[in-house]
Each structure stands twice: as C-alpha cells, then as structure tokens.
Image 1 (cartoon, rainbow, N blue to C red):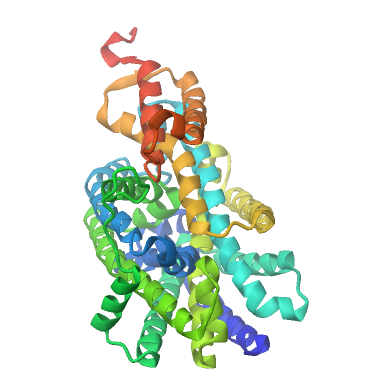
Image 2 (image 1 turned 120 degrees about the vertical axis):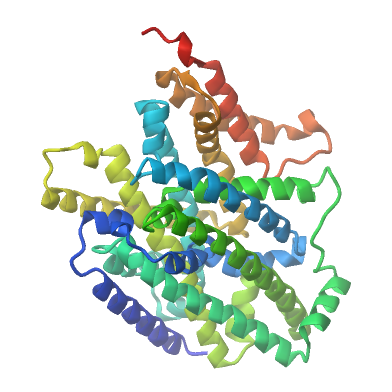
Length: 485
C-alpha cells in the first residue's frame, strides 16, 4: 500500500498525542514531571503500564518467536505473576514508607552513598540499552514500510521519532505520560484484536480450531520438560519472576508511575490489575503468533522472526488492517520510549546530579537543567539506536533479555541484600562488587559447556548475576553490632 497513506495516519496519530500532552501538562512543574504530583489514577496507571511493559518488541518479536519456541514464552509469564506479587507486597510498601521520588534513594539510606550511585548508574545503563533496542525495532519497521521509499535515511527517521517524543514529554513528564500511555495501550490492544479476528475470519477458523491446528503444527506447546534445555519450565518460571521483580520493581521508569499514585493501597491494586491483564494480553500475542505462522504458510511467505508480522500485515492484508497495524505498532513504540526518556531524566537529575539536595537551586534553575538533561538523553538514544541498526540482530527480544540479565543483576543483588539482611557493607567496595558480578557471569556463560556439560544457561543468568552480587556484598560487609560507635 502507499507509504504516503501510512504517513498521513502516523502524523494524525501524533497530533492527537500532542493535544493530550498540551491539555495534561498545563501548570506542570518538576513534581509533575517526576512523580505526577502523586495524584495519578491507579486504573489509568495500570492500563497504561501494559503498553510500557510490552513495547514494540512484544508486538513483533513475541509472535515471531512462536515459530522456533512455540508458546514457551508463556512459562515466563507465569513467573511474572509471582514477581508482581512480590512488588505489590514487598517493594511498594517500602517505597511508600520512605516517600521516595527515586527508588534508588533507598540504597543510600540502607547501604551508603556509593551504593546508591552504583544502583542508579546500573539503571541508567540498563534502561538506555533496553529502551533503545525496543525503539530500534519499531523505527526499522517504520523505515522499511514508509520512509525508505521516500528516500529518507534511517538516522533521520530515528531523529524525527525522538523529536515527536520530546514534544509531548518535555513539559508534563509523568503527569502527561499516564494519559498518553493509556491512549496508546488502547490502540495497541485494539490492533492486536483486529489482527487476530481478521486471520481467524480469513482462514475460517474458530478459536478452538486454531489452537488445535497450532498444536498439530508444533506451535502450541507451552511447557518444556527437558531440564538441560534453556526452555525448561522451572527455569523459565523462576526467571520470569525475577525479570519482573528487577525490570519492574527495581526500575525507576516503571516504579515512577506506580508511586505517582496517591496511596499504597491503590498502587497495589494497580500492580495486581496489571499482572492479570498481562497474562491475558501476552497469551493473545502468542495466539496471534501461531495464527501468523499458519497464515504465512498458506500465503507462501518465507519471512521469519521479527520480520513475519510486518511482512504479512503490510503486504498480505487489506489496507485498513495495514493502517491499524502501523498505528498499533507506534502505539507500542511510544510508551516504551517516552517513559524511558522521562525516567532516565528523573534518575539522572535526582540520583546523579543530586537535584533535590541542591537547596540553592530554585525551581526555575531545576527546570532548565532537567530540560537540558531530557534533550541530552534523547541524543544518547539516537546514538544507541544507530548502533543497533549497525548490529542488526534478528531477534530483539533475545537482545533485551540478555541485556537485562547483565545489567539488572547487580540491582537485584543490592536490593535483596538491603531488604533481607541487617548487615552493613563497606560502601566504597560496592561499585567493584557490582562490576565484577557481570564479568563473572560473562565468563560462566561463555564457558558453560565446560562447566555444566549439556546444561544450558538461559534467562536464569539474571538470578546468577544477582546471587554473585549478593555473595560479594556479604564478603565486604559486617554485622551492624560489630561497627565501632
């Protein structure tokens, strides 16, 4: 279909976002930007966080992965449920009790100033890598579908997308994002449902018949029982729990929205609601993945992985469905990118620059610095997206989960040590411990064949990383009563 038609709808969608941003950012200040004045509606936050949690990678990569690993991803989703419960009843009460704006401030009070800076730095690294990987995937699809035929270079496409995001997050921050994420999640889920119904109708399948056909083709398997496999169900469930605890509960972007809710009780309701919706939505994405492989085979399409869904939606479905796909795709793109840029701005201003500790800085100066940081982070995003474009990995969901294992592991170790022990660390040695842990994990993963034989390390690398960090912290700590007074 004509790329100009797609571009018209993309621009119309963006103008709608700008309208919402203008309305919600009126009379905004730094508190609005960082935590939405702690007045966000928990139902809006829960629904909007679906879009942030899923992103364009889930929209494209999860259906594409069904061809190689069937419904194995649902094992991870079961773990998600456990993780969300831990966040709701362990982490959120802690964050509300301490009235935190940045969750990494907890590390300063519990472990020390360098521990605090280390935790915030690992978040900045992890979220930058993860968010730009997600952004790259969707920008590349938009580039291939719309802008390549117009002669627009990839870097210009990326720059335009980032400018769009900056325009509607520059003033309102979290206060605006709570509303724009809700809107975008609605469009994304609407696109998901439309694509499922279209394929079912076109192939004359019912929901049950489609599931049976997927099972016959080997696409419908959920549980994998080989203990040596990376897909072994116990490994996947445990990994899913810890992925959620770290990538949601120890992530400033996700928690920034949760602690913007007025009360702890409402924030907990937000988290439980999010967990239930996530299970249903991700199952639908996997179901769509099975349908796409069946439909692709019937059409003689050879595209696989991340390329399958865009190829079918843009070239083998009606114009209306193609438009819905593009709108749903950018609706998946913006929540993961806008929230990341906003959270990184918040964390850098509060945790690295120490904005809240600078009593001499008035509101106007803080706002100016915050806006410059916001622009700088957008520039960093541009550079990292171009780096991923150069690497051009075939499955971005694998890249993102691997990045999370290496960069969130130290955060897992730091928070776990702080919460479950009463020991006091040697704060000056904490950065060394947190740097050595991922290095040791890399050595273990690289030489796992010689260490474990046929046993394959998968997503549990995150847990190993956290455990190494925890042990390292134990080695550089003493009991509180041993401290000299």
